[in-house]
Length: 324
Image (cartoon, rainbow, N blue to C red; front, side):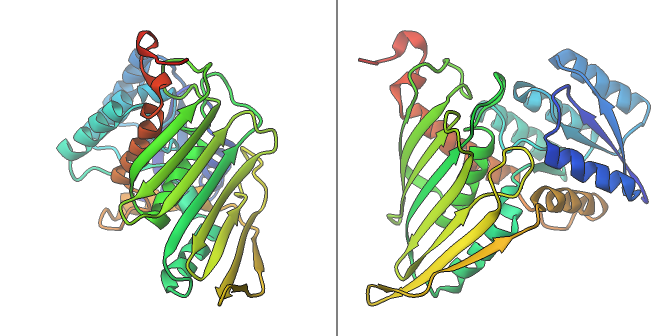
């Protein structure tokens, strides 16, 4: 298949990084992109069905409202289409279970979530250093994801902060104990938070804290990793949507309580989304290739996010809230 026909389904605009990556792939003749702009759940189903009837596409990129993801992804998987969504996670665990059930019932399905920050060069470099063992055991993580504001239908915690939670779990593994607090003026539905603070701990005792904010006027994407014999700091994220600043990796070893010379590596490329889409296309041609991220990764990330929110009484329905 020389050119893959891909339908982008949903009225919500793709973020800048995905738009530019798709344009580049289209310009090089790798893909042909068709936009099926729709917003409501039923209109999306009708657009998908028309594409099935006309045998018009080979794969689908599902955007639209996050609440429509489960139904639209399920429909697309039932047709046998490979499916990519730029979203890191859907709205709820129930949606995620529905998506994973459709994936399993239509095996070998190809489904890829947009957990693309894990593919950035700075993250890969930090993982290589951590895996080398020279820094010893990981002891702690401190993470901040802040932006100057979000659209009414958008969310920091379910958007860029979900990428950060995914990266935290890449380094630390799953979190066993979770506590969290959200701002008092949030709606009862998840995804409406403007500030969330969480403390987490893994089974092995690695401690972490996380602050996500839509009222932090200086865009921030930062993960500080503390090890037995040094530290790794990831700062910034090369993308065009949130202006998090240039990616840098700051690292230093410590011996006998003395910090050695600190090194700062800078990374110029904004290639996480490009890599994710390239690997998606490669897997369409060869489904035996490993996925850069799986539905299990998205499930684990969403599970941690929902446990953070559920740890705060304000997450309960309005009539059950215990706020003094």
